[in-house]
Structure formats: structure tokens, C-alpha cells
Amino acid sequence: MKKAIDFIKPAVILLLVAAVVALVLGLVDMMTRDRIEAIAEQTKTNAMNAVLEAPSYEALDVTGAPADIDEAYAAEGGGWVVQVTETGSQGAVTMMVGVNPDLTCSGISVTKSSETAGLGAIASQQSAAGDAFRSQFVGQSGTVAVTKDGGTINALTGATITSRAISTGVTAALALCESLG
Amino acid sequence: MNAKKQLTEGLITNNPVLVQQIGLCATMAISTTLFNGIGMGLSVLIILTCCNVVVSAIRKIIPGQVRLAIFVVVIAGFVTIVDLLLQAFIPALSSALGVFIPLIVVNCIIIGRAEAFSSKEGVFLSFRDGVFQGLGYTCVLVIMCLFRELLGSGTIGGGLLNGANSFITLDGTGAGIRIIPEGFGAGALILPFGGFLTLGLLMAVMQYALRKSSEKKAKKEKEVKE
Image (cartoon, each protein chain N blue to C red):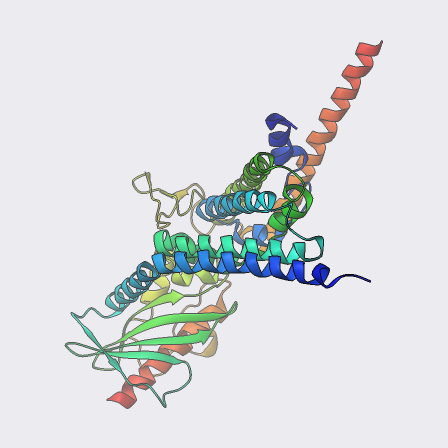
């Protein structure tokens, strides 16, 4: 028969190791948290400025809006910036959509996605192909769709699902702004 | 065990990816641009070395029954630290590698080396093992990235070099130096199955080279005997 100590010792050692690791993680988190938050904030402001430039943005209450709308902001000087999340081919695609006061799209920026590198990922890249794709959305209004679905957006080669997700997102953002007036 | 032997093992004869064939998942997924490859390789190198040292240092007090649990806790700790540091200081790399940094926790290279090496050997040997195995992993990643990026997207050094003014950009924004005109790359190589093709080719080349060198060695020994 094994003694009680044989059962307790491994448990205690595991607990000690876990406690030390937790302590170290707590310290690292304390050191990096502010910086990570500041970077996230900066990235967001940059994305908002990229789609609709304004000196400041005022957050709007979006409770009751469709589930794909994350956040909405009224830009100082007219217009809105809406953050929308749609389902792409590899997971969620989060984008910022700028909307002019006349309910046309002023620009989009994909802020978070995990689409296929070389295909869908072009939608979020700072490259000639990415810019060309995103610029198609400028000036769009009403329902936005890719050519395959009867719209005017040329889908990225080999990434129809990603292009479709972004079109859906822009449509949702435009609809929201219309309801906001 | 001397350093030279450990280095050859890590790079060639016991290379984690090409010979042990572990840690393949992330290898396929991220080896599409040089920036990702170097970033992932170095992250694994750092985490592997730290874990090897810690596991080796506490190897005498780790009870056999819970050793895997302890390895995983130590690994998860270091991975989270690296993840947080990357988010805070190299956000571009963090967003490029995405979920693959947290997934290093379950990367077999690290738990494999803990189980097979550092839980049995001294701290210094384990440190060296971590560095050399990490280098081996990084080298394979870099070769795969260069191959897939050149033939797949037609550039070299994506994220790291900027073709327009040939500056080295460390924030991952560089578009790379374009070798093949845009749109003419074999896009399939960028997809995961292109990763399998590339890896298969690399392994074949490796096996060929290893066989040649052992044949040569055998021949030499035979000559000496005669």
C-alpha cells in the first residue's frame, strides 16, 4: 500500500510550479498591459482615420443593432465609422467602414482577419492589389455585392468568400447609418 | 556530448522538422513570408531554450507521474510571456503570426525536447540543445519561406525588406523585393498544401544528402581497411 505522501507530493509540486508561473505571468502582464492597450487604441484610431478622417469620434450606442455590428462612431464634422465583423473563409473578418453623411461608403479597412495568405489576406494588406480591392468600395451605397452575386465589386482572385464577407459588412454598415439618419 | 555534435544534430541529423518530423502544423501555416518565418523561428528558439533550462533545472524534483503536466505549465508560461512581449513591442509580428504564437504551447518540438532531452540532461547541455534545435527549426522555416514566397507570391523578404527603397523594415510593412511580376506567382504554393509539397521536397533532398554522406563515409572506411 502506498503512503499518503506519495499522492500528496506530486500534487504539491505541481501546485508550486503553477503558482510560480502564475506569479511571473502576473508581473509580465503588469509590465505590458498599458502598452498593449495603447497600441490597440492607436491601431483603431489609425484605421478610423484611414476610412473617414475626422479630428474626433464619438461612440454611439449600438444595442439593438444587428449582431454583426460591433461599434459605431459619429465623426466630428459629419459621417460615421462603423466596425463590423463578418464571417470570412477562415474565421472572423473585422473591418472599419467609413460612411459619408450622404450614405455612401468613404473607405474601408480590414483591421483583423485570418484569411488565406496570398489570397483573402490581400484584402487586409497594404499593397497595390489590396488598395485596388478596397478602393472599389468607395462611393458605394445601398446594397454592395460582388459581381458573382450581381453587384459591382470585383472579388479578389480565389477569395470570393472573403470579398463577399466584406461586401456584406459594408452593406450592414450602410444600413445602420441609414437608420441612424 | 560536445557542442559540435549537438549543432549537427539540431541542424541536420536530428533536425526537429526534417528528421523528427514534429511541429509541422505551424511550419505549414506560417512559412509564407520571410518575416513570419524568422519571427516564428526565433520565438520558438527563445521559448525552447527557456523551457529546456527550467525543466532541466527542476528535473530532480519533478515527480514522474505529473511530469507532463509540469512541462505544459512551464511551456504555457513562457509562451504567454513571449506572446505578451510581442504584442507590446513587435505588434506587426504578433498580428502576422496570430494564433500560432499561443499554439506554440502544444508544439511538439518543445514538449518533445523536454521529455526526450532536458528532463534527463544537465542545465548547460539543455541550454545548448534548445539553441541548436531552435536554430534547426528556424533554418527549415527560412528555407521554406524563401521557396514558397519566391515561387508563390514572387517576392523575396516580404515584411522584412522593402523593394522600393531597399530598406530593411522591422515592422513587417515591407512589401519585399519583387522578382516575379505580380500575378504570375504559383499561388498554390502559398496555400497549406504548397507547404506540404515544399516540405516533402526538402525532406527528400535531406534524405538524399544524408544517404550520400553515409555512403561516402562507408567507402572511406572500406578504403582505410584495405
